[in-house]
Length: 110
Length: 114
Image (cartoon, rainbow over all chains, first blue to last red; front, side):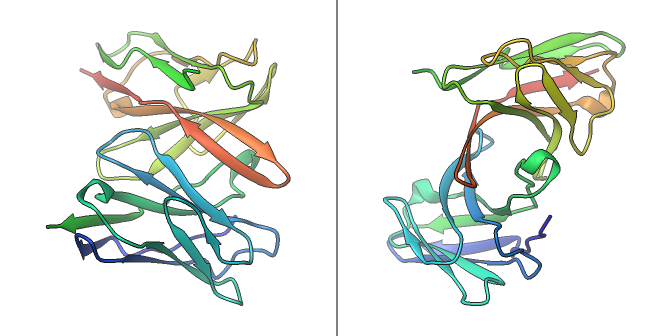
């Protein structure tokens, strides 16, 4: 299963865009990239996923490089409620279950 | 539509005791799984199921048993609790279609073993 690498923490000013990077250099051609977030020890929440093309939904945008070795999750206008741990995940662990790494702890500051 | 329901939310056990963590989903998903999360760490997969009657081990299965007699329920059993099993346990129900999976997580069970 592909491994992902994320910075352990990031800060962002409220109202600004938060750009969270992820490296997944060993990802295979048919593996999706998923982003989840976990707010204050609640259960993780799905944000967005992508395979090759950039994706956007009501929560965020996902930019995947052409070689698929890295991606960036963009929260266009971060709010204090976006403070959370963000996990970049590629499927492919046991039974194709999600394999979580350490994630990025995003702190949105006033 | 309740999604994924875990009970209890909190539990304190003595070393050596056994207990069952309950997980139920009402989304008719085939895939279900159990994760544990230790302080400051990501989630680690304990056991998972790809359908009723089918279970398999994840990354950290020792000390835990599971069964899947119905699509809705996926209980996790601690056979003989140890302090190392103090953790937060999350159950997930997963929608899988056309290569894409989306996991829905319960709110967690916070277990302390003393």
